Length: 379
Image 1 (cartoon, rainbow, N blue to C red):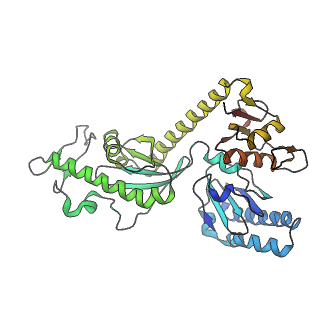
Image 2 (image 1 turned 60 degrees about the vertical axis):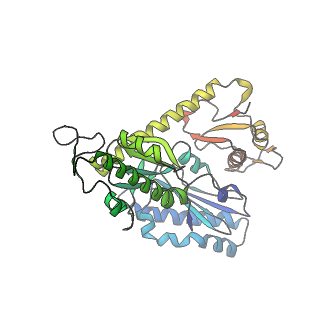
C-alpha cells in the first residue's frame, strides 16, 4: 500500500475496472485508536457488500485483502490525522492522510471518489517547512495548518560546522545573534572572532545556505515535488532566496527566528500564515465568481454542466460539501437521470480535472451561489 502526498496524480485520474474508495473521519475521544480501527473494519464490511452486488465473494475478498491488515495495525492508527482516504484497485492500494473533516463512507465505482481530496488540497495542502537559522536548520512535514518535525539522519548538514567542516573560513564563531537578531537586553548581535571577520562569516553563511538548498532539494523537494515554505528571519529569507535553485521554493514565507521558538510556537505561527493564505485564496475565488457575467456561469443545470465538463469549457467548479445529483454522465457528455448516488458529481469532477479545470468543495455558508453547485466557464 502506497501513501500519496500530492493531488491530482496519474494514479487517481485514470479509470480502473473497479475502485473501492473508503473515506474515514477520525474519532475524537480517549480511545480514538481503537474507535478508528472499528470504523475502518465497518467500512470494509460495507465495501464488501457493495462489491458483492457486482462481483463474486472471492473477487471482493481478494480486492479488500490489500488493505485488510490495516485493521490490526495499531501504529498506523496512532498516527491518524483528522481524516484519511483509501483507494483500492485490482493493481494497487493507495491512501492519503488528510487535515480536514470529511464524511465517512464507501464508494464503489470505476473512478476514485476524490471530493474528500479536493477539500483537503484546494487551498493549502502538503508542503515542507524549512526552519532556517544562520548556522542550523530543521525541517517539518506540513499538512494543512499542522506540522510534524522530521528526524534528520546523522549525515545531514543540519549545522554550519557539520556542513562546511574544514571549508569554514570564518573560524569558530562566538555570536550572540546573527543577521539582525537581538542579544539579551535587546542590543544588536555582534560577532567576536579573529579580526572581526564579518566578510568571511558572510561567505560561510552563503556557502552553508547553498549546502542546505541542495540537500533539501535532493532529499525532500525533488522526490516528493511538494512546495517548500521558508521559516526564517527576513534577512535570512532574502539571502536564501538569492542563491536557491530549488524550483519548489514557495512564495509563502513565515518571517520569524525559529531558533527562539518552541515547537508549539512554530506550529502557531505556521498555522496563522496558512490560514491567511486559505482565506485570501477563498476571497479571490468568490470575487472571481461574483464578477463573472451570467453567460459564463452555470448553476444547477446538470445537462449543460455535464456537456461543458466533457468539452473542457469549465474553468472553475464550486460545489457544496456533500452535494449530490442522482444519475450519471456518459462518454458523450450526456446526463442521464437515475438512482445512482456519488456518481454524477464524481464524474463531473474527474472530467473537469482532466481538462485542467479547478474544483472547490465549500460548506453551505461559504458557497457564493444558493444552488449548491456552480461553474465558471472559460472565455
